[in-house]
Image (cartoon, rainbow, N blue to C red):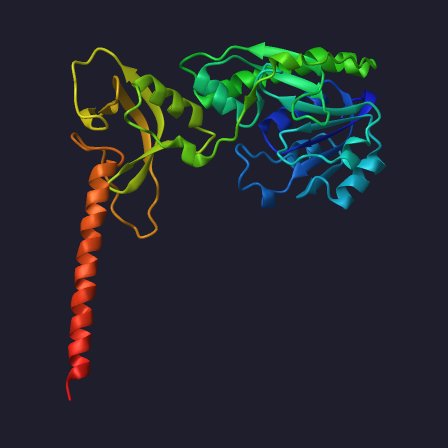
Length: 345
């Protein structure tokens, strides 16, 4: 690695933004004294999990894998590395005071929104869903989540047609621009942070995979936004076809075709574009879909003309009540038959 200079730096990370930050530190020849990477054993629920060891080793940087960022062995390692600055990027675990107090200058956090707007969880999905602009924001970590003073911020636009992957690409470019602008100043010893105006703070709540369920009564634009916001690298928006989960990865709005049908029903089908579905307001092409695999090897359903997507609560309740009535009738007959057999001498 070329000669480095400036304050001693440690980075801890687990996703692509962490990897991108480490690349910028290496590219700017910063004095990186250690890298911490989340173990694959703890990666199951991390969207966009990225290993950090390959880049650290290629740059000849000390590397340590962790499951718990606050574990005593990790805290001891950080103390031995004696950092001036500790980057904690793309880690859902909260660093405790013992760890945060070690670096001389402070800990640097990262968030992909125009802080103080959009603090909190799942920011890329929320920004895509709402079409709100984002930013690569690096800030000095404090007790409040995403609330510390800003060290550098690089804004970017989010378009109405962007998918989560498009927003992620824009974010990566913004990370590069922000760090290439700020790291040379940090190398010279500059540490200036601007407090966030609390009166402008907004917050995003947690999103779970089940939040991707499509309600076909919604307008086509709202469903399209949900599909874009939950697409790769996230679990995807989904519906049900013949009791099988169908993930919709990509879709297109349709405003010119003269079709009208029952909400949730496929009203037209083309081999090149796929099914055209009637929503609560407007039509939507499902251009990329995938059925969830079946453990029993069941035959995969087809998105065919006339198919009704999702569940109709009234019909499903009636069907369940009929099946329950049939089961009760069978149980009653079995009880009678069993009782009669016991009475025989």
